Image (cartoon, rainbow, N blue to C red; front, side, top):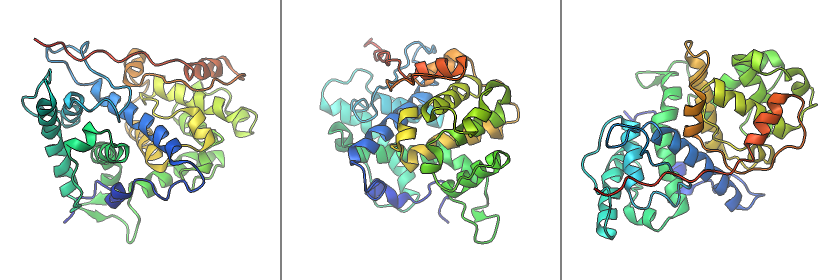
Length: 329
């Protein structure tokens, strides 16, 4: 029986070809790369350095460009698995060492793909040559295996759907869950695109968990707050009080540049945070900021509350450079 953790794996071979017919593919690719980069950093930040501290953790600025030496891909897979992969070249000298590093991680990743009887296998050359679609597809495999798996596992028993003919894909489960969370706000969630652009659904999801931190809820629901400000406010609260790294840019959400895979990744973190009854205040602010460095976006010009001003201004902060890799012994 096939494991159910990876919904519609065949999409990996045709990365988002039919997603945005009316938009240049580079736009969703850039937005997806940002989301996947931040998701990777949320796990890399949890990986201890070789001396047991977190100071030497190596984050990435761009998932397409920064995995090519193999070191960070090894660290990412180790952080996801919670176990070391074995020895690798900490200071690769030449392409042979780089390929060795990449293959150490790719053996694990390709095994995950093989579980689904998918013939596609990732190779070191794809990452060295920085093939965008292949790298984004590879990260999507990891997201499905280590993040979306929790969503699909909750809706199945021994690999079989709990309800007859019920769609238990991550997409269907998350849409249904979001609708159940925002019913009391008289909002409708039937897709992962236009229903999210005005900021009302993100605001309602966040308010449902932290009602005292969304004082302008009524104005948002009435459409009296700029969508980008509303989304920024919701993300600010989720990041600092629910322990949810900010994977999406408010400007991308409002402009409709966020693809379904990025939305699923983001919503799965909301789902996970709300499943844990013990979550009351999220993680420490400094930890969350480390997980997800801000990237530059346009800053809203006005806001209805001081929280809006604070959240919106955070979207215009330039990213700080990633720490350097561990030095050679």
